Image (cartoon, rainbow, N blue to C red; front, side):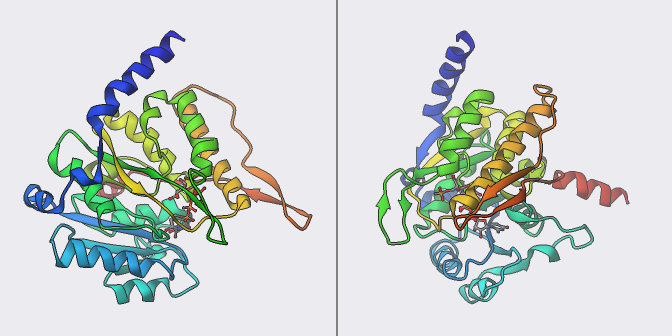
Length: 322
Ligand SMILES: O=c1ccn([C@@H]2O[C@H](COP(=O)(O)OP(=O)(O)O)[C@@H](O)[C@H]2O)c(=O)[nH]1
Ligand SMILES: O=C(O)[C@@H](COP(=O)(O)O)O[C@H]1O[C@H](CO)[C@@H](O)[C@H](O)[C@H]1O
């Protein structure tokens, strides 16, 4: 109990000075603070033809043409089967196919692979990750996230926080109903094993920004383990005081099914477990499959396994040596 109280005091001490809102980071002030710092926005996109174009258009209009804050917009086409790449190009993004980046390496899968390839395919000093399925995107998502990084050299990583309603297929809105895996899996795991991170309200949120030097120094877990893995690994690398969070207001996106989120939850649990093993806190190696039951009866064994890419900097070093 004593430790818990100490940790909670630590989180409370961190929360105030490291939390802000998007409105505190007006674009004109950021342009002045930017100087020669370059900024890349990376959107991982798998079958997001209906939303990716609008997001790219807003970034281009508001943060490239009207105010030169963003230097590069990259959409990572993550094995899409729809017109994601075309919609993104039409809107003005550079598009790379996930498997075409560092193609001499055997391809891995999922969102974490898309983000790591996006880091490798861009050059910005600051990298901003924005999901491509957002329905509530505004330019303040990007300006809010880069604000602390452009104005405070002690900050290396910024996570978004927001209200996350669940929007049903019929358009019904359930306030606070979104972020199901965040609330049911990620935040409990964080509070049990990494309570220093408990002040980060949306640990799985897909909008965040970091200094390239730091993002290239940590591994990227594949699939949907990437956000959880980054938080734990960055806590170890740079510490809580190098992290900040910015309230972007409101986030709506395309929701996945409970079956898909069940797999996501399993991937995040395996990611957490792998970090506990690395930290010598658990020893057993868990199974990596799960039996899932379909709505129409029947059952499938699904593979929850996540892989991970090494820190990009280590790869570049090896290649230099080679
Ligand atoms: O293999 C994948 C899975 C997801 N994504 C992208 O990552 C973001 C978040 O994924 P998703 O919407 O599936 O997760 P959710 O937000 O529902 O948790 C979206 O832009 C997806 O298109 C991706 O690039 N590759
Ligand atoms: O936060 C969550 O619980 C999940 C699911 O959100 P919803 O319950 O569909 O609003 O969404 C996030 O989780 C993924 C895994 O970390 C991220 O990759 C997504 O960007 C994020 O939307």
